[in-house]
Image (cartoon, helix red, strand yellow):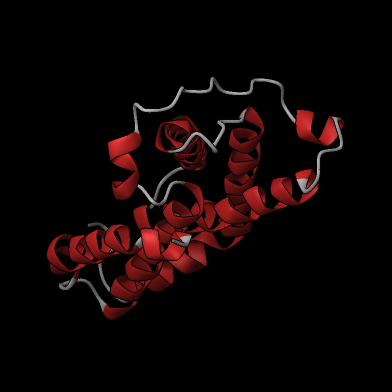
Amino acid sequence: MNKLTMCLVDFAVLAVLYFLVFLPKWKHLPRIRLILNTIFYLYLCMVLYETLMPVLCSLPNIFRHSYQPMNMSPFIDIVENHANATQDVILNIIMMIPLGFFYPLLFNEKFSKTIAITFLLSLCIELIQPLLSSYRVADISDVITNTLGGLIGCLIYYPFREKLQAHLQSHGNTDH
């Protein structure tokens, strides 16, 4: 069974969550906010797909394999010249750039809180991965590169912050 098929239950739960929890909460927002919130939600779903899924069908096996401790040697894959190590670093950075951009835009948060949220999300993902599969290993390099991606997203967002926030405010309240 391929990964996408195994993730269908997870995607169904995420769809139900969107339509029963988030959409009713967001439907009163201006159209641009609804669209941006939905894009952000879909982005987070894709991050979950790439990093943790399948979750629900993995739960029965969660304690049937040993938990591998986090690799705490930063960038050891690059140092040891492992296949795809550079590609993994680049993809981990790219994956979190949207979080660094959209989080402060949608929640009007400070730079430091956005970086902290990026770090904590990445750390949680890394610590959960080995629970769901014996093939996944938590790696400090991923936490570092994901956080760097969030930082880059913030650096892209902040020069345009005032204009973007003004645009959102002209289309309604920016608070949830």
